[in-house]
Length: 142
Image (cartoon, rainbow, N blue to C red; front, side, top):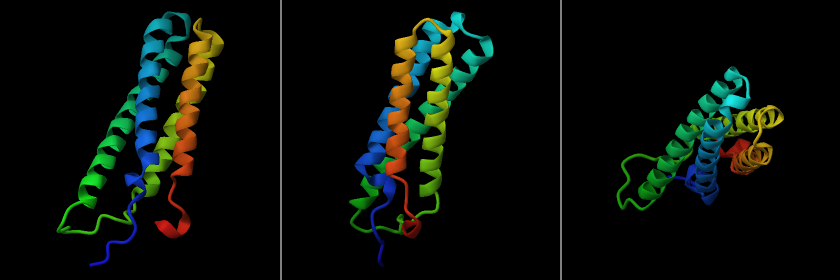
């Protein structure tokens, strides 16, 4: 049974995206706790909500990466796990969540007191956006 090429979520880029997303979410949680009183309450809640969603995305991507590597070494695979339709959705969500977190960090930097730290968190999110964009499935790969 031909299984095709390895899925995008088994690549080192996906591992990087997962780890950078987790790092970005933890940065937003920490900065949110330290600088929450200096910004609008709704901006603070929005940032913390996005950080929570980004943490879930990062952990699930990390699990998907580990599962893909485990399945790739399975001596008798039962089902083909490659060319799955959700590969593109994974990277769209990763790009969207990280871009929203970067924009939120920039808004927080404009009204908070920890400006360099918020800019650093935005840079981490932009790095994750770049990783997601580089790892996206191409048209013929889906």
